[in-house]
Length: 436
Image (cartoon, rainbow, N blue to C red; front, side, top):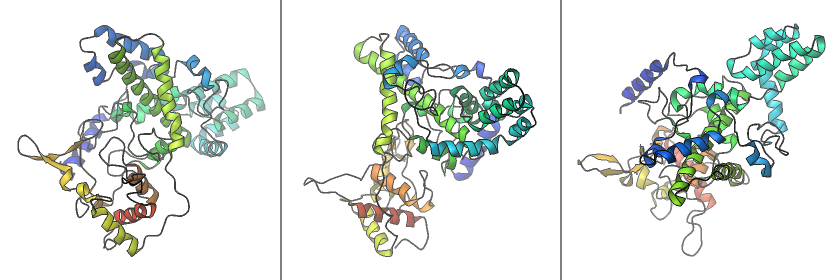
């Protein structure tokens, strides 16, 4: 597809989505195409999978995790990321530093509501809040009824300052901001997804391409938040900096909710295929297993000690050699000798004799290597961002990991400094005059 055609497709998709604003009560979670295909001849199992999922995940109109008792042993309640961990009160993911930033953002985002509260008009203040803060608005209205005078204003002001969205409020925000492309279940199949290249992310596999963690680890909160802050260059994914910090955190929570639900669904189908049954206790076990994968991501962060080595002509030249060395980086095999994404390993001749992409990604879509000459890095263009892509590869695609790879004698195939040389060379390709 040409760039003009792609731009037209995006424009038509966006125009087609105008006015698409389904009421929350009309939305419900459906099973994925993979599940429907796997259970095509097993209608009772299909119903069983849906029943078990409904036990664990409430629908968008009442979004929350239903298996609170299932978290008791871990002492957490995933419905409340902002609450302290312990005694099922929350997950403790929001740090004191995060909380300070959230307060400041709330005061800016809800300044008109706070002005009304200062005047003693708390209900009017509640009316100034967006629909995505519906629970907060209801609480404020109840505060004016229950309290009076200065105490009511102070309590209302504190509620606004400390506001962190519930999953229900975040589901409402997702409905208006994300559903058009990503779909009700997060399957990347919303009404505006047609014609978008690349397609919107399907969260349900639990695979996210651009993270700071190694291997197939689930993204950290900070990774998803950064995507919302910056968008993904070269795609239809915009940034959401116009939303408050608390709203963006809430979208992270809800995207994770959809991803966990999708992973649990796949786990249930896999269990049925292996054991030929789905007992009652399988749902709690599946949810716990998937949740633990997300919690472990904090231990898989790819970080470096010290400062980033400076980009020098010598390092760029060394990176050039590594890029083309089939026994080292071997990057040219896919990205091409000039880094244009046209390497011999990236294409094949299909049955009709036409040249077509050699790889498909984890979502079954054809994928071609990045044209590095464009200077567009979807996972971020900072040196550390490019370093992580080279070190860990890109989950869901053919991009391999070079970090930690050793030869038959246990020696690194590429050293730490080699990795930085590759980083500086790759970044130089999109900057005319810098590449050797």
